[in-house]
Image (tube, rainbow, N blue to C red):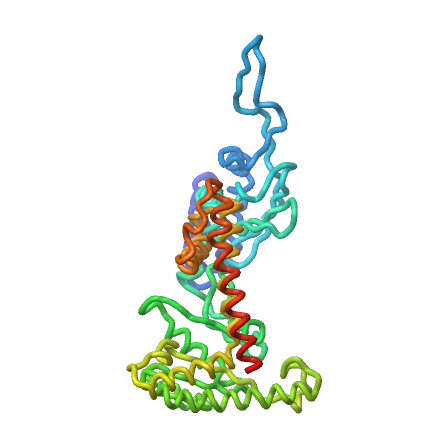
Length: 396
């Protein structure tokens, strides 16, 4: 009699867990992860780590792989391989983190190549590996795709002035654009990739803040005109853009004079009561400012617009970004980074586009030296030209 009762109780308890688990997964995915997902993933990592490390060459052997039998040397697979020790996986929202201590002679490169194998072995969405310090790699596990159902940040959290929450990152974190930390943001992408949506989000996030929003939309205000009431100034044609940019250049010179008199390098070093209102300029379709019908007046207007823009957005910033992408690709190639990774592919494609004119200038046999020279040359050229033009504009 007791056995059927216990069986019925176990079945009822199992059904209750299934129902509650399904509701948790839908309504509170964070609780569902901590209560069910994290324990399962933890057990998989603990019980499969050694096997996965051996299969993916994440282990080392300090014994010789050669043996002599009389006059013949035989090379085989080293035995008694040692796997790196890992820390206890620490749960985080939507995933977990752990660290692996490298054995003497190991590098992070095999771990970067094994991320896809680790994700399949642990049945998670993604695994990312970084080397925060020498002799150690940090492994971040994302259980599910955070972009499938992104969650809004906590409503009680506040962000500092000139910060805008524009979306979610692939790591599950909040994507915040901070104009005080990085003042210039070029937004590029194919048609219907979300550029206008990003601009609209920036407007709605910055408009409630004590800043002056200036918009330039030379397509007749088709995009930014929808938010006309939220802008301090909005230019819908190039002639209007020239007037707006001219006023901004005058304002910039006055602020530079005020900072110079106060011995400050920027307005953020001024006293709060003397600090002018920050200005954010949003430009939709930058190319529209440079299009010309060939007439003398139209070319002069485009040149004037270009001059004003270069005074406002220091051109050496763009040159630094281009040189940084080229240098980063050189480093990733020399370290044999995983070219199947999305970030590595982005850096590689950007570097290819930036250095298209310099390919095959150097044709030596060594692949590493040839790549470093063919990609390093345009990086130096961009830095030299960009900083030279910026210096000429500043002193002109």
